[in-house]
Length: 236
Image (spheres, rainbow, N blue to C red):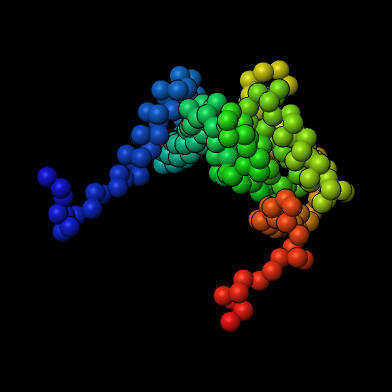
């Protein structure tokens, strides 16, 4: 039976439940995550207890405060580890699928880089694609698919960018697990390691320039725009 319109909307899970779901997903794809989190939680507590013994001077209140501080730092460190490992686990789930690079460029880039989840070139038959990101290191072209099939698309896109922005450095990255390729979960880190050559205003200008060219509609071959006749209906 279909739900009535007056039925209350399904309540979203709480923060703790969401964290538990993330932990379960991460543990499923990353067996070491739970032990790293445990170590990250216990290490600050152990350090706090040792410091409390030597610093508190036998005062119970000071000892308790030190232990509480260790617990808080342990929880914080465990959450940071969970976030990092959950990100890697999520990338493992989508690695090798069409659009995986776009997902990283949309949500996984660090500060200083701007990416788009839509490819700038795509092969509809093989689903191979080339994505573009702009940052302090210039323009990065990222291929998704075997290098033997994406080389031509990369060369075409590099020529297009060089023609429009001849003084901006271009970096080529291939995502994959073969030699010379960048794993999906290391893509954001690899972009960050590119030598900085542009300022923040220049990054914005380069990105706007490339986006404006990308949205321009191409004129069909064989059509001269200077000889196109207006439609009679629009002349009345």
